[in-house]
Length: 390
Image (cartoon, rainbow, N blue to C red; front, side, top):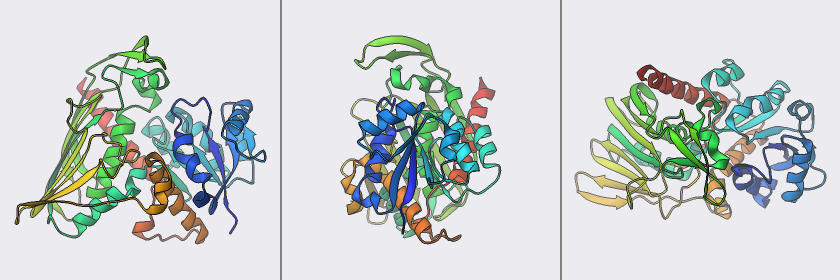
């Protein structure tokens, strides 16, 4: 079968986060990825910037370069458009390609807010799409799901999460991420770190039936540091850096008690010295699961098998055992940040190659654009509660 022809948006030698180069390109140019995909075009802020990226990443001279999203959309030899820009640029860069009928892979968040995300999808189901919520498909998530469905801890009674965005500084951002302090951009520790984490929790336990929250801006004055870690300037942030949320769980994939509770605490910045940055407990009638990592809630990008552990406490025997989990052997050729993204590509490719069937089995599913709108709605409700409390 002919490969799926890919256009990459945001692959840049000067990109502020380098996510496209770290987490998308390694799979696409690998032997595994080339079984299904071919990179045929780049879109950057200008055609010249796209050409520089083509040279920087040693892509074939046949790769076409664009600086205009509309011209990219008009290229009939592109099947899948992959967007890796800042969230407030997502809609403007992918909407022309959506109108042209192309497949879309957009990184999370889909847009800078729920309103724009909902307007893009307009109540339509975008089967021919991928949203970058890859925490849903990483093996750790699947392993926790399997333990719950096995009945080893019985019916879930409650769950708690304590997490710290330890990739952030206590009172500042790097220059490349200064926009994290500007809520209207849509990319910040709440929407990204917490957003990815809560999506993973929902994947395992189901959605909220209802919730109440409180957020706080503990450090409004943020120091921006340059590449040498020297203070460069300061900004006033309007993005909360502390979140406490609790509520009742709706029925999910596993056996959930009617009044099961979920309580989450998230704080930007590192945790207390030498303590875990991510602790997730799932308490059941017969036992309890403990998921723990020193690397924070970034399971979608930092799931190291030797650092992110799953333990089970059997209440009847009073024994604690470690639940092993592992990446598939083919995924181990990539750095950890690229493995979940690679799994999304694999699932999508198998669907395309099967003729895009309308029914997909549960273990072959992947998140799509309309799934992102549900998560945006939750974040919108969260921020609405914050605004009402101020």
